[in-house]
Length: 597
Image (cartoon, rainbow, N blue to C red; front, side, top):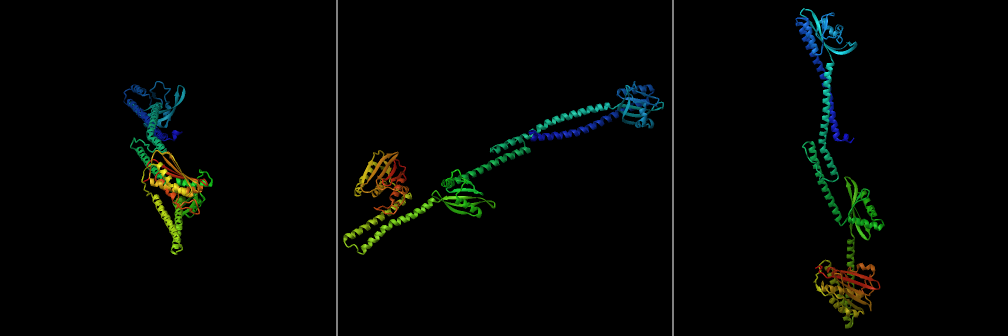
């Protein structure tokens, strides 16, 4: 069945059917032609033989010689002759008259009687019955009748006849030859048609195989071009199509990859939704947003078909109003601003694309800016108020004695120094955060440096009734650092520890090697820092005391300065604390010179 449905089978059957129809028509025509040809040929020969016999009879000197010659001619050409003078005088050329046509037939047959009665030459065919070996036999016979006149001027008729079996035998031989030729022609046509169709369809089979390879994505497949006919042109067109597909798909893949990389590298989240609100395309920031929301709602992260209610409402408004919408969503403590725009399929909305921007840092910066202004205002308000109040007291001559005036002037001086220190620290911190810090890096013997700092703060510690202890281990390698900046760090940490450690408390300055550097710790037995405040201790104006009661002097900028200096040296600073037990600040400094200059 597959063969008959193939192009080879169809072409082979079509060619074979066409040739067969032509051969059948040609065979029929040839058979008719040769049948007439054999009949006409037999009639012509019979007529020639009869004319020859008649000539002999009319020119013969003796009847016996003419009759003898006539018999010889008829026997030679397998014919029979009847020389008829009248009903009583006639002669057959054969010795036996059993197989001869009876004389009465020639008188009774209408056509044959014309020869006798009208002296007409007649050529006819017919089925005649005669006796053969005692049996009546009907046979088709061709008869030629010619009138003649003997030398004695006696008139007669010559009937020369022959059985048509001879003609049929010749016709049958011709038919056999024609049928044999037709059979050979059909066989040759079958072989030729199969060969031709196979040769024609071979390139088509190669194109089919190549098209299957192209369908699998192998666009480098080529069809060999062997001819310049229509099939060759089709192969050329196929190869061009494959190259065009390869080029277009490469362009599409490059564009798709480019879009994918753009989406992946975007800092903003992108979510594409279809008409039903199902998520189609997302990028990493969007996945982070959806994952955070799913975690907050208690869903599994894989259930990415869910959307936050605010985002779903925003999508419904976009589809309904066909306008850009904006909203803000808070997820897991982060603030996301969402801008959603409709996507059109010609004139109909087919979905929407949402751009999500994490505005947490901006909101935090706004809050820090406001807090900074509030903190600076608060820090400056107290000394300014004191300066104003004590200066008015001096102007109004409230302090009567010289000692009181000196005391008022000393307070004004201390507060002005505090204001100057606050302003200078703010300027230093601003320069550090802007990356303008200048470090004078040189090898620093950190062990000797630690001993010197301990000695420096022993007096201050005694004044505040605090025990300052140095737990300093031996350090073999020098540290590449700015000694003044490192001293500023340790000074800030020890000063903070002294101010927050109660009387009879202790402060330990510990120095020990740590990995590829040194670790310097300042540990106190003070009140400690609440756990909720630990992440913020290195921010500007941080004070564990929420009511901003300073107790002893402090600007709230020291730890922020410490962090910036340590970061500039490529180190790390951290804080650990327990309420009622104390606080430990740890500083790590590397040996190497991986420092910011």
